[in-house]
Image (tube, rainbow, N blue to C red; front, side, top):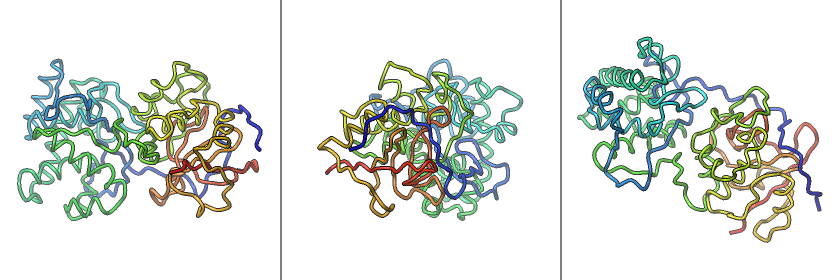
Length: 373
């Protein structure tokens, strides 16, 4: 038996194979050159309230004139611009990801070109820039579109993955989606949800929605954590990591507990609990403290608790835990060092890509817990 302890989950392992370097951004965060080859990262993907009546793009009245103007500027109309914003940020003017900002989720590089000197967090400025950028993408894609709907899809894919990625794949969306997991898992549902919303058949099944597939640990983890590693300066502030975490995770973490303890949004135990509880896989999972969680996992009849000697013994969805730290094995997501696991690290990282290892540099051996059935 392993003694249950309550050491904070501070990650001390050395990165395996280096850090995943993000070359470009999503949603509005593209290179100015169409030839740019871009790595897709998780965007703010909140396609709206599932309780809303399907078929509606609900444009807040205070933004209506901005959206109408942007729709006219882009040539795609208000419904498309509104559906994009609904998908990008759920109309949050202060929306942030580690690399994109504002209601329309622009990266600094793209904002410098299309922002016209405005404030990315000012909806009037951002929505106008969105209209200008969509107009530019429409122009770039026009000669390669089969019809109006194909033109819209190409333009939306370019807004999300970058026009360089679309061009590199010969303006073939199926080829684009199959070229990298990120494009298949992020860009494809991004395009489909916006097209459906704008045409009156809105869906809320985007992969990064907080509408989580019940019982699916891996999909839930990928819905709440960034796919790439996010590293932050050390801080013990209660809200540390909140702005840098996925908005979906913040929503879930806030609902999980009223106890906003030290660096709450970077707590590894809170993340794993959020995944297990939100997915419905284990509603009884302890909400915090790796010591309590370790004791629970090794004594619960729900789990197979074992000591793996190699990665080959693991399955996606397995929990890896040792006194002081816990993270999730998610299987092969991409070919980076952080492409096989996800987790948080107290004081330094919100939920995001996690280096995979079975023994860390302090000699701590990780145990695995697999939910039975």
